[in-house]
Length: 255
Image 1 (cartoon, rainbow, N blue to C red):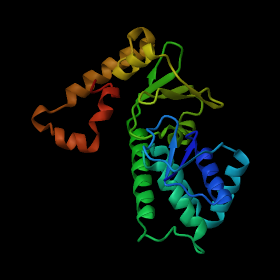
Image 2: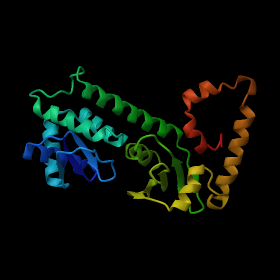
Image 3: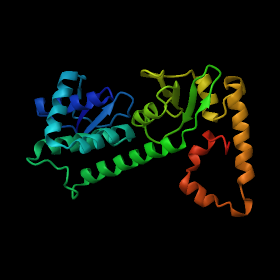
Image 4: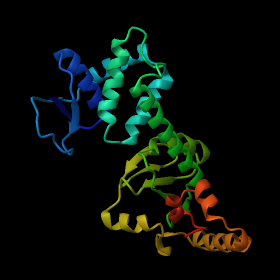
């Protein structure tokens, strides 16, 4: 068994592709330092991330794959599924080695799996846009905790930058303890302490962190939501179908 170890970055994965062709060694497994190591290894290589080599592989893919297919690859990377590294490696290798590429070869299992995962990631991002609920904090920042299944914050940034261009906001992924802060000019990555994260995961930040108007309007919204609810027509199965339960704790009208 030939295995590659890398730094678990996308540039690192592309560097693995370059290394494989350069050394004519193709891995049976690619893992990062935090992954569980296989028991039987014949050859093991640590592949350094080299940006220039990564760029050369990406340029080669630009000649072989459409922009849509390349975006699917990036979506698969954001899925963070255990199979991601080897799946993308095989897909890239097939794309490079095949004279016409394999993008439209839907008889290939890897092509189908790439498309399937990319669709699931896109759906997760779409639902996140629908169910984000901002809360105004005491310092005037709109804050929204979220818990997406996949690492999709980067996919929803363009929507919120466009829709709330003049308003500072934070969208925070409580699953990965990382968020994006928009100051009306640029977006930067932030993270909170474990103590603050525990409160965020509950979906109920203390009233002392919310502006007076926010606390007031949240209460009004809850009362309105309750007043229009017809108990005899409640259909929890249909509600979960249109609004998955994992989003509920961050919805003021349900919390």
